[in-house]
Length: 418
Image (cartoon, rainbow, N blue to C red; front, side, top):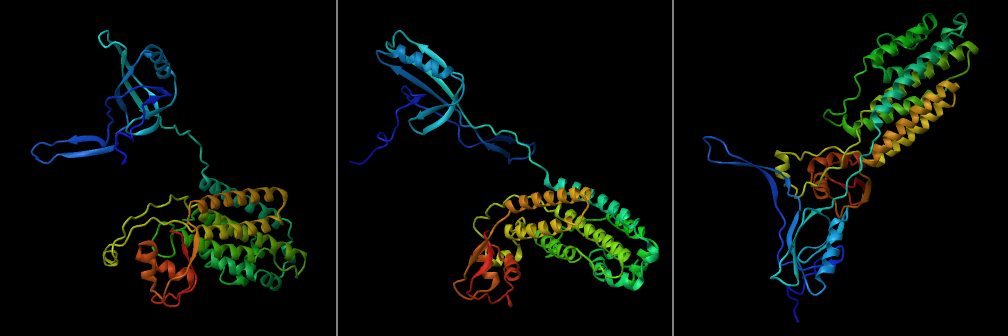
């Protein structure tokens, strides 16, 4: 026998106290405000969101035991908190009892009528504090710069500059000067070459610390929200990765040339290395913890996207950020092993803050997955099929080092999960 709509009705109850419902109503649709304007025939309705599901209906308790069941229902309605309502038409739900009325009618005999009102029992979200990891990285970067300048001045004060030889200093600091040229471009005009760099340290050891202090005083940061491949998460990860390699390359210097040359060279290398780490920290602090973008639904055609590209908020690739985090963690750890106790604490705090923030950034990103195209495709077609966004063809080419964007071979490649 075919099941009818009557067979699908559930027996009504609240907190397991049964009753009958002859009819029920609940608001649906959107709440809002209708705006009507003088001299205009077209009104405007401003939607404010969905209406709250407030259930209002009459309920009957009928039978010889109506008084006992009445008392139990009254007790259930007066109990604070949420309870289960079995709605004949809508099923089971958690609700809270609101304003209700009860009516006794002598003519009605053994029947008691209730006018019941139930409100949705939505769970309250407990306020939670979220650590601002970006601000922590900025603060620890500033502390690292201050500690680095103090350590350099203390170390250079113990060096007898009269014993410093230009040739030995130049040979010992060649790698350090290369890092200065790459990472601190505004300082290149002051030090024309490695010889001038070594002479400046011999004649005025405090000049380098003053220049770096001024450099960070006017540091403009990273162009994260700019346009092009050199901005956004990909640009920041690439920039920080290159700077991390530079910081790691000058962890130690040559000890040849005498004790004073070794002390001065190592103090200079330490200052430059710490300055690169400070710059890394400031760039990392500009990488926001993002929110996953919503699906774009039905993707526009390629022709439409050529005229109006899909606007998609950039999301970090978790694998890239995790790789950067681990490399940077190791580099900072190696630098801290040659620090005095006070500076070690500053470096360790900096390392923990950077790792914590990059972990948060990675958690908000997407993972890489391995896919194999069914046949040779262009990067544009593959990006459109995979993401519904043909503009991400550049991402496909760069991540997998495709030789020609028109020919992506049917071999395993890595793409973002979404």
